[in-house]
Amino acid sequence: MKLKKLSEDDAKRLRDWWSGLDNERGDRAQLRRASNPDDVLLTSAFAHFLKAMPDSWVEGKTGKNTSLSMSDMALIAAVIARVKSEPQKADTTFARSLATPKENGSKAVMSELRFQQLQKSRSPEDFFLRVCRAVNLLSGKVNVVSLADDIAHWLIEFRYGPASKPEDRLAVRWASDYYTVFKD
Image (cartoon, rainbow, N blue to C red; front, side, top):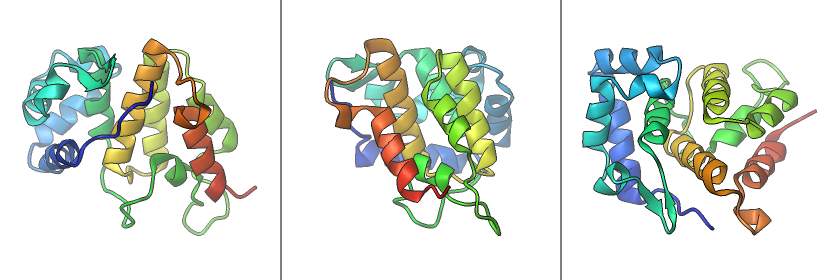
């Protein structure tokens, strides 16, 4: 199974919804207060998220033989709502951001140990907590589309198992991105 990336239209809709959260502070607050993805399902903010997303998202179809549940989409909405800004370089992936040194420092934003723990999350709830922590470590500065793609990819691998080809696995892509920037 190879997960397809978000289409340009899907990415635009996601970014439009995310940037619209600046005007919908109540929605952003509802999503940020969620302590787990299932809390998000009961909010008006999640209904607004679903309205903004393409029909394929609402139907849960993200690629061939793969799908996202409502809880999965709620997890994506709750994490994306925590993003405050995007990096200046549009091609900066989530994993690369985690390895980038802090301002005026030489150590990565996320330590190698925490990065490995994020990769090895055992449940969607555990992953949710760890990915929210990662966004916080980045001071909310994350590529929205890369983050949403990675969350969807992790959730699909969790539900259906990793891809047969190593290069199609999220952990391999994350490790490649992280360690190309990471400095000991």
